[in-house]
Image 1 (cartoon, rainbow, N blue to C red):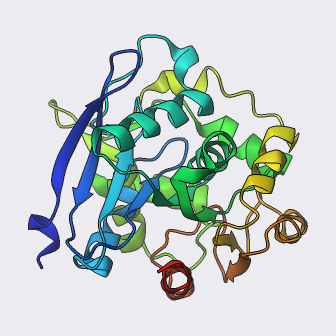
Image 2 (cartoon, rainbow, N blue to C red):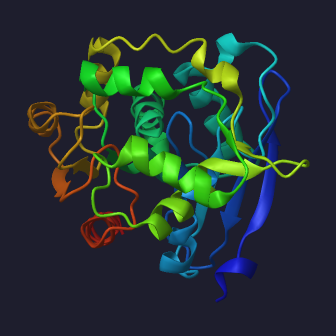
Length: 287
């Protein structure tokens, strides 16, 4: 199956009337589908490689959260919050008649996954929490806060890639310039005037408070995930998600597993061999 021809664009409406977008890679296998939810400033392109990896073996949906990618920007920036994202995902599941799914959540996407499990655990057949937990380290939050909502733009993809390399060498120390340009094409888009701009609404930064510490709601969510097969993926160099928090999470998850991705910070791209091996093992445990 060709990756480029194997997906279709899905649009659905949120409860406040936004037109939201996802990629849908279909399958007739009958296996539990996967729903991928990206991080704060990211979009469905972060998961696109999984279309070729799955190759029709399992249905997989890759979501653009509101204000990102091909989804509409919110009318009120206050709706850029995890509770609203949970509602948006539930609306997608109802639209497509998906009663239960396996969720791959990177960073913010993992928070959305945990909150979904807290409110409607029957919808969650399994979970991948990618470099995220109920407690976040301030160092990583400060780094994110200093970058989110900064409307950078560039003349060429090479310029965008070099800028990302300057700011992200600690996260992906083994990336080449070619890797950084490919990474930039996930985060940026070329606009109608030929400028390369970030592919999200700058107003997503407005509700972001950047405060660390623990979330009681998310720790409670893990109690609902006790019997759900859960993969905790942690970047070895992560400045946001500590090893201590990861092990504390394992104590609450009877079916939890922790995999550390070497020489990667926040967050693993899910293209690393260690990530792909861990994903295969998670799916094998569920089906």
